Length: 148
Length: 148
DNA sequence: ATTTTTGCAAATGCTTTGCAGAAAA
DNA sequence: TTTTCTGCAAAGCATTTGCAAAAAT
Image 1 (cartoon, helix red, strand yellow):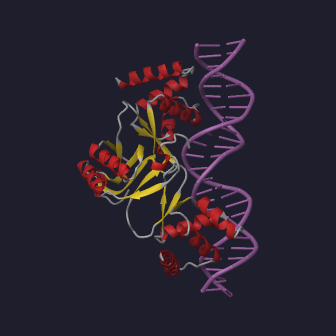
Image 2 (cartoon, rainbow over the protein chains, first blue to last red):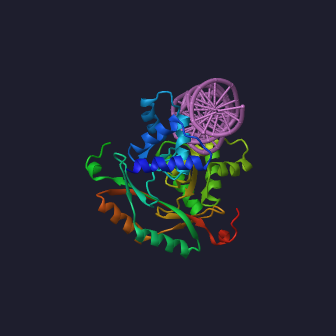
Image 3 (spheres, rainbow over the protein chains, first blue to last red):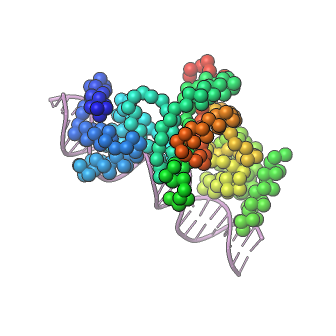
């Protein structure tokens, strides 16, 4: 189970950096791993608050930063002014397809696009360090109903 | 001169929407058009403040929104938590190559990439409405010096 | 016993908004 | 004269931070 591996990885990270585990961190990580792979700090906070109502939102933010540092999460910025945290299971690279109707997020990989990006960069003498590719549209379920 | 055309376009937009022109709007538009094609509200404010120190930042923000509504500008979000406004001369579509050293921004178009994006979307049953592609790296001038 | 964590409240940084006075039409 | 604009200060919003108390080693 990936959950167990992630937890082991996290405690290794803590130990390696002279940090401590805590009931809050354990709870937050557990909740993070048992929710859909893309969520907001506030969503995660709501979830953990159902178990321990005393947990502060700042603690969730601090935990999420640790998860990112430990390589367990990736911070994304699909919408302006709001972060979304993604479970980073393996170190796999991918881009995103986002439904503007229901918010569904699909991860994809396209090597041809990556190659073309490199080509474009080279043409301008740039040395690429990273990129951001996000496709927005409507998923099959939302395609028909113009509402939402 | 594109500047003249943009000004005409703006006053047409104002008229068509029951809005008024003002010395501030004129000044802000003029400054906007005579600066590099990508800038921050604050940068623009600093510029106009050199001519009329009394102009408020809110007025600049309000003007920029009008420019966007009028089709003269496009709001971009290259870095989190900060908008950058781009002169939208024609209605041309393009993506961006951004130097992490000096901030230089290069616009490019790549039809092959666009086609592949459509293909990816179709493969997942999505109907694309927009996308965001940003390539980050180091431009030729910044390639060597690891500083900056 | 020491050092890290936590929760709260306050601070942050960018952007927007309410309002009363100034300026267009 | 009527309606839109402006500048200021205050509000918003997601996120971060200072601090004293609480918890982990």
